[in-house]
Length: 257
Image: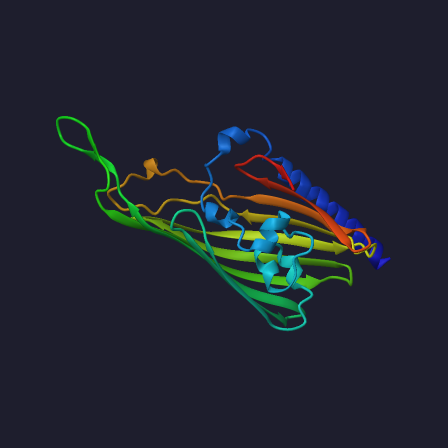
């Protein structure tokens, strides 16, 4: 009886998040580049990036960056850390810690992005416009401090959530805000097949915190890079696993991986 209720609840949840994901399927071309805190979409480890996402099979401390439901089965403390030398001089640092607590598991994680020195360019002159590159350097950085909780509702079904404190600065312009993730994982018990779904980075629009000499009208509120991820993973043939991941970002086209 309880198992049937869990299965029905899981199916209903999947339908809800699937429908929610379809809500931002229209007008993809108009939304490209329109979201704030795009660093949240950077994949932080090679394993998950190679598989196209870990919605279904994420576990332990690594699940803090993919699906918070994956930390629910943690029976001991776990830690992960990594650094990615990304585009140009950009460095992406991530670290996470998870431990069993409060009837489930709690996690604390951090993502930090440093873009290095960026050369300023602009217009100069009073009577005519003269473009002068390399005037001076400025700094840009992003950071997300994340708190997660995951819990097993049965031996097959788990749920988890993450709250994120976000900050971003580009020269003298800064923004900050809150974002949330919610995810589920379901172990079918058949040939190791697992199903996972996550809605990441949802929350209120972000307002600019520009200096007093800059008009807020020049920096309108921006939406978060909300992402829907759905994954299935299991044993295709003895000794070989296969999986499918569907990824939909609010400002990008849908991907099947």
